[in-house]
Length: 146
Image 1 (cartoon, rainbow, N blue to C red):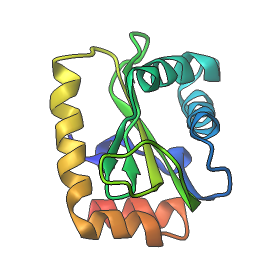
Image 2: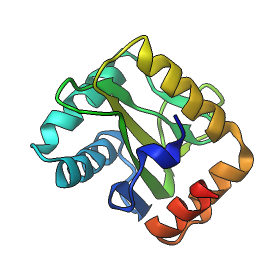
Image 3: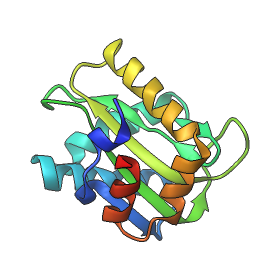
Image 4: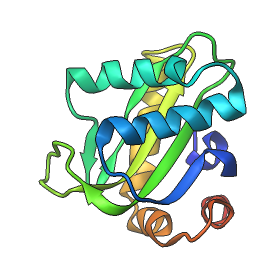
């Protein structure tokens, strides 16, 4: 499942000034709630619970907090591109400046395949650069759709 299928402009934040991991996740949870309904905590809780198990940073300045939320009807993602890199524990010691929150209704094993697809897409330097250079959410979505 491609990122372009999971994101909407309303769930894309660019030039996010706050770089505290928990605060970024809470901002993304607010975007989920705004578009999908419910309370932000419903979205933040599974993401923060997963972070307690270990950092979700995948390297190259990217983190992918993820979790299961049974009330969703389909998988969804939200992204924050940070103005300033943030200190997540990372496998390559590169600070995180792209945080993509992924939630799915069904959990493993289905979401493991989806997460692997997202990671493959993000490992493409052009995709990561598109995130970092996007000035608006709409611009980022257009690049992902190309």
